[in-house]
Length: 106
Image (spheres, rainbow, N blue to C red):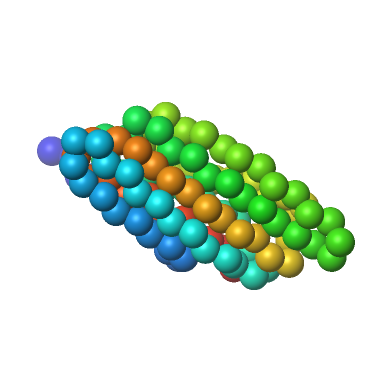
């Protein structure tokens, strides 16, 4: 008999959205200062998930969109590096009970 030990999830939850139903849609938004790492976590029967990450450092600003098609934990790039602040807005669609989490390591 083997036992599996789940590794802890990285960072802390900074925003979370849940929904349920045949055509469930969940969303989450957060702002985090001085992030070292950002993550998107999708749980449930996910058809699509999208997150927009906008970060700034001094006068440099960057915004990027990332699309995912299944549940999982995804590390998101921080651009520009060593950003002073990042805004994250995410949404997910699917069926049954779905969860979208935005996570950050500070």
